Length: 265
Image 1 (cartoon, rainbow, N blue to C red):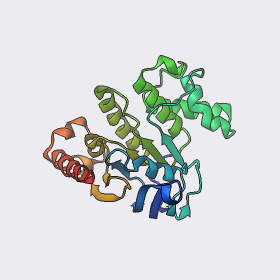
Image 2: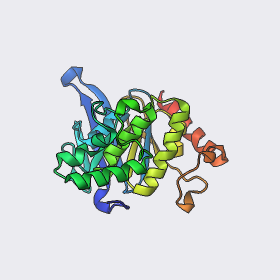
Image 3: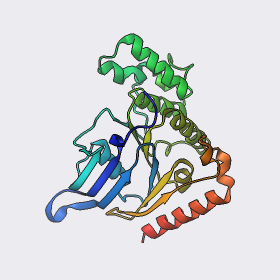
Image 4: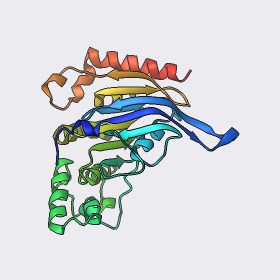
């Protein structure tokens, strides 16, 4: 199933704070986040190291529970992980003894989807991420970039309404990273999912995001919320790497970099 989702997929953070530990030794990580993410948005979250970006993502994923406030999807509070959310981590976390296709099929298999249907789904998604010819390979035979594509395929095959990505390209070399950024935009254009993407790179955030949120130093709070509209966006096609050479891109990059700099102080 693909296509823009409905208002029931709207993400809301209402008065959300998070502290680790209790009492006098509690460490505040996130402070009073109020946020709405509309269906189909590609939201990038940037800020200083340790500011709580990953904590925000983990609360939406259901891996962490807010200390105060509520995280909700379509008005329904998040109380744990769920199939409507898929998470792409910095490291692929694939099973090396399984083939690429078997890794991708794992989610549907655990949910009792028939062998024929999960094979069909897996092959469609592998084609979408450019791995149509690698389904029978073992994951250790793939490059780092291809392993990340396989991880994205493993998430997409479960048809999540919301995809959470925690610095998925951070460990890759610059050329592979830029290639996967472009491919991710193509995948999003085809699949139309809501995405929350955590990154340290301002360039990456501006290139990928329809919206960029800047968090302050710990305890993190949102100090800048920027809608990003670049040349060509009105056509509805995925952004081209050449958009990085435009004055508009440079202006967004400067604005967000300045906000990140001030967030350190």
